[in-house]
Length: 416
Image 1 (spheres, rainbow, N blue to C red):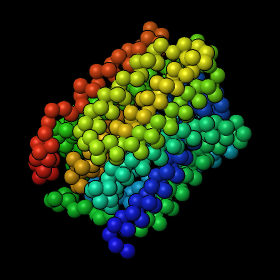
Image 2 (tube, rainbow, N blue to C red):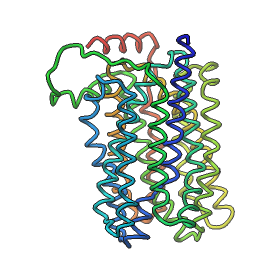
Image 3 (tube, one colour):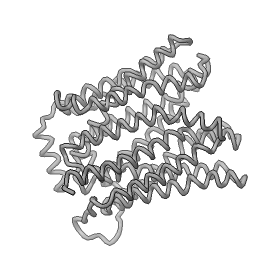
Image 4 (cartoon, rainbow, N blue to C red):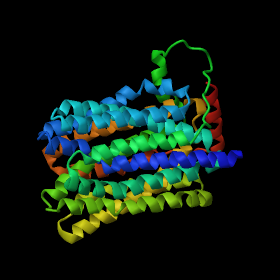
């Protein structure tokens, strides 16, 4: 098997693993909150704790894993994180069957899964960079992005139906099985990923190693603005998401299925955007596509503050979300490819871990902050404030720098 066919084989199995586990995650969307509500009869404070604290603490715990994973082969790490997530998730239906399930257990599982998620995603990026030829990186990232939006479109509605038919822990079991299948697919991929060597021998992990990812990001002329932009955009979008639920299902009187429809249908835009990204880059260049798509994705959310009741309000949400998700579908694979291209192979895991940990922590913090804002001003005003702040985020995108300068920066950073 020649090199190109071997790379296609390994990426194909990675894509399968990624697709199965991503669908399992989307199928189990909000599973812990639903289990807490339907099984444990938890109150709003406990549900909020699960939604915010679990991922935030998981992000913190994932930080020391980045330097540790960096100098190990990535495929075994991905398999290990799949098996860990499978095991801890299966503890939920087991405790439920024994009538021993508690909110504390759900919180521990949430933290463990969040830390394993970040580690897995960082290892995926390093593995893709390792086995996929540079000229095929954008195509590979576009396929992963398409898979994400397909799972997001199909998973939550099917998961909600499964809970209604088979009980509240059904989706947790399915999510656990998806990780087991993912581990099997990664095992079938065979070798291909190398074990990087440290530039100098180090007997143990040093405290300074934990900051290497952030240090590299903040020193890079291109990654620094992209980092600030993507963290802020994702935080503001996600912070206003629960408020839109409150607004639509509460004062505006939409049924839960209508809310689900308003977010399932626009995911088609993610597929369209991901498919278009490679063609747009070939025609206009990566920098221009990042600038235009990054600007467009910041312009839609403010319109959600004007949603009204009835069919017109539902159509408005669908149109806005379609525009937002299509813009994200174009932006995300180009951004992911750019980030991999600008990161040396021996720093990918630390960089991606730092990026994901910051994003998750920021989402948790901004979600809590916007919840407080909504309690004072109302959900519509809080959504409007988030949308208005998003309009300023394109100012953080890289602008006015020549490609030659970026290449020199990347080479200089790789040597330090």
